[in-house]
Length: 273
Length: 276
Image (cartoon, rainbow over all chains, first blue to last red):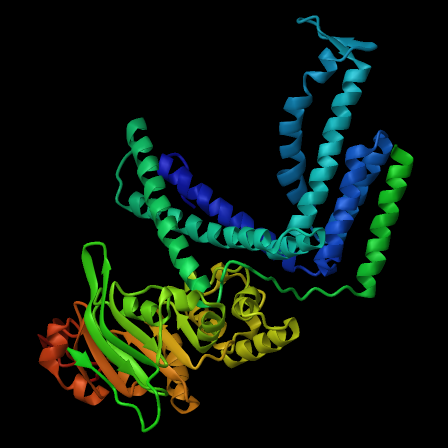
């Protein structure tokens, strides 16, 4: 593994990380688990059906219950808790925690604690607001990550067609995803090749120059590539309109799961509002 | 120089190019080119990098149009306006397929299935027909197992086969192949040659650009040698390959040092792989 102390090393390493993340997600999507077996359209509707009450419920217990459902779904889909802890729960806690941090101090209400040195008051209402925010975001993020991890990205995009998202948008997003890897690989190769001819550390000015010139070269390559891709599309009959085709098939198992998602969603809304 | 290939009696040529010139700003890629391609012929365009072969293929596929001169496709003018015309354009796209040199350009869809489905969907085929043809095309190229894979997970040989399947699904009468064996490992080259050799009896017109002299006797009925945007020689593969001065002038062969089994080191021109 490359040392990560230099600018080029860090940049190259982040490209590799991005590729590894995508590869890992695709591996999970191929595992034989509960969510993986579901029709992507049913899964998208079902997960969305759970995210809505997680965002709308006013009951702490209901939101916690939805998080528990998400954890059970993860276990049945063979998504490890380690992955959720690292990629979702700790990341969300960090970012949402920063947003929620002032709430216990600025929300008026019953004071439950005084900070010793700063003499700031912590209110029960403020703690509850912060707790609700963090729990809601944790639950919704867990559900969304489960959707993305257990479904190949192109299936997620195609499933969006059930919401009448235009085919051209689905195609553009699919192509973006496809070429992201090519550009990433190209950038990785550029930095690797520069690294192989470098001795010692670069100064700040050199780093900025390398970053700017690499961005320029990559931009130029991407522009050429987009022209070529357009010609390749024209060559196979593209005339401005696009159509998509899927192999999705709703079976009785999918209908049963859709019913289960609907039951949980309606119950959560009933109990939480 | 004019290079032509006469057709059989009563058979119209697929392409007739007269005095075609194409420029990329200051650079002349094709220089007053004349060429006729007969129906059902397997034609190889030989030339070093930058000799204008790929530009010619794009013109034959109606992707770019000459600055000067005319191109006729089955007797009808091939122009920007005619390709944009719904009737002629759709028919032309169904009858002519181009496989690009760089498969990453051609594989723009998220999966192999989507890629192979793209052409038929654009030509407004019915969904059930498209599904059936996808299965057939993948089986023909022996890549059924790659159906749900993303292009960035494929080897270069697999990408080329997917690119070919994505064109062959339309069953084009005219197949244009840009450097089909470039950057392939020996096994993938052998797969590609097998395919091109099988095309002999299929009635398709196949135009292949290459600078790989090893393969042309297997895949060509006629050869055209390109140099600086012009055709400098034409004829059957054996005749072109025997003209060593021509091949040297056009950069298709060169002399370089190499070691023989006896340990002797010397330089001479190479036409093809050999053992001695």
